[in-house]
Image (cartoon, rainbow, N blue to C red; front, side):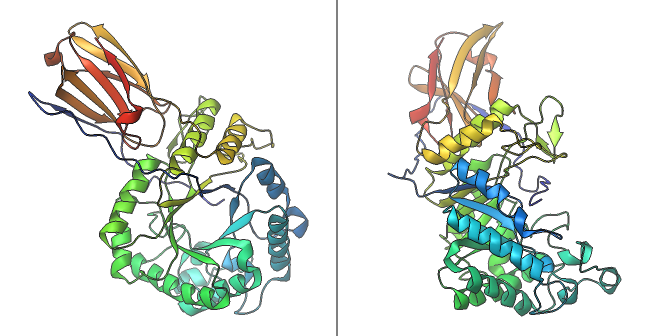
Length: 439
């Protein structure tokens, strides 16, 4: 499992409103668009694990090919591939990975290889954890950074040399800013992660200059951890920043990109984890994320890919994940392998990434002394409602949609219930996509 969302990157449900006696109409939000999309769209699949057999390597790839995926993201844990000492690779793990990379290349699918998990022999974990570390099973000691970052660099350099341009990228570790200590444990995370990245980048480039190096794998969109990484000296040691955003995904991308620009960093963002769980109505929350229906999951994934394709600083959008398990429902397939509506919806978006996005809708009605505005919109970003009397903007509110992408807002009674022109739009798309009604 690549992801156990803990909400570290979440932007809370919010509403910001303002009532004004007079203001000029708001200006539209500029939206950069590509004439043709070079977005690398794909899906997360199962990777290497203890006991993986080469014969099992191609099953997910066949379905990813049917999806039309350009890339797949999968895990190649260092602790599984090189469990006992430096330079001594597990023959069975290597055979599995070779088969997987070969099958992907035959299907013209490139791989984002996530490499994390320190082997027992290299871990900087406290001695109490190291004594319990088992080279044949994942444990707490594997989440600690290596004592010598050069050992990690040597391993990812080996992968780059062996697999070369069959890889879309090597992603350096997973979610170092997660608060749960399950991926990167220990104190002073930014400094230790920066040391890993600074060791990995030159080793990979010496082995294969064409292999892209992804830093970050960030879940936080407020930029606090990224700023700490800049202080620790990461600039120049990656070709892109991986980000994992499950809440207000588009707004989070915009937020972290603004932090990049403020620090003179214009490397592309790789959104290589995002998604929705189709666990409604059986559950309300799963992995700290709001459950939705299968229909909403499908439309959300298609909309998000198409909107990411219009963001010129986003290089990849990789859905989490191909198949659900018994404990979570994020997959395009059920745990038994049956296709959900999300499979066809994502396939369509990958085939036509600049296709139409779900429109904004709006209806107005009177509720006593107030106007009630209801409607829906595409997922992933803040929405804005503006109320005009004539050409004068009297009220605006920034808000978020509910889990089903719907909204219901009561306007202030001071506005009255007639003579109002109302428009609603998604922040990313701007006023050109607005729904407008008068009452």
